[in-house]
Length: 446
Image 1 (cartoon, rainbow, N blue to C red):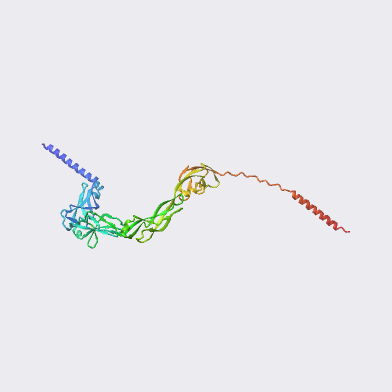
Image 2 (cartoon, rainbow, N blue to C red; image 1 turned 30 degrees about the horizontal axis):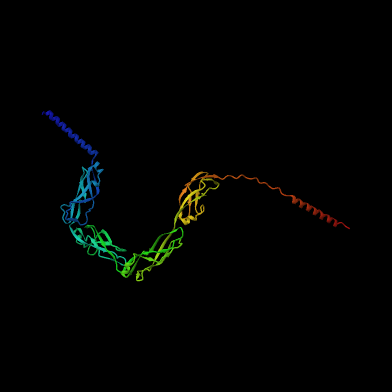
């Protein structure tokens, strides 16, 4: 290779290096390296030995991470791209500080600083033990019923966690309520761990987490609970029916000879209530019928309510629309159609006594309307309990016009009747002349 060729290659290599330098400088100017702080980066624990467990849980305070990267990367960098963790593979029981490490998912990111750089970890040896499950019965069944021994499945649970906590657990509890229980009660629920003083202990693993408790409920000998069967006689008024019968209390407790109680039907009757001709609900307190050698616990009578309601029906009626709100100087020229057919639903006794256009009205509200032709939907006015099922037609056409101006009638003055006045004047003149002549003759000397 000649010296001339070597010089040429050296020149080319130098040019290439200079080009690369220029490109790098240009890239740094367009996308310079910058520094920022990413806050609230969560810290996770990794590689925890199976025989150790955190005393204070597995959550640690978040850290702040100062990073350096090209501007284009920092613009999209979030805390989710930084995986902060502590490696517990070499941890020992007790208190210790573990350095925080960062895995950056984005490329070209340099980790400059982590604050805090380490977290305090408290570990204990893991302890596991079995504890018995106890049923905590909170109340008692009703009078006359007895709760037998609870059956618990499973009878023990396995508790695991820090030795300092597990060693304090004495039992697992499940609560059961027996209020108003007249048959076997079965509950499946979470258990709570208790220490020797009954305080609840949390933060431990329990397997299984739920248990099942069954408590048999049986009735005492010589005591029996019976349903009350209300009795009534007669029939309500025509077009009325009985819609419901109830007793308060619905059950009563009897006590007496067990053989007599066993022979009773599963209900007791009341004295019948007469509902003949009734048009409203009836509520009365009546005695209960029981054998002579059987006693009733508490009340000797029960309150019976017999619900009586009218039969529902329908009726069709024709109504003449009623106009309301028409402005002064206006009149309704026509309503088409002139009548509206309405299908009414409601209690039969009320429907049978309805008076169309009085008890039920179809009102046309014409307020603020000027002369013209309008389509108006009638407003139905009807008694309580009655509804309009169908209205035909649903709207009517109303023509409003100004009232016509009345034509003035000329006033004719009657000619007075002067015949009577003429006679009066004639009589007056005659009497006057007569008086004057008499006076004249009387005054002539003899």
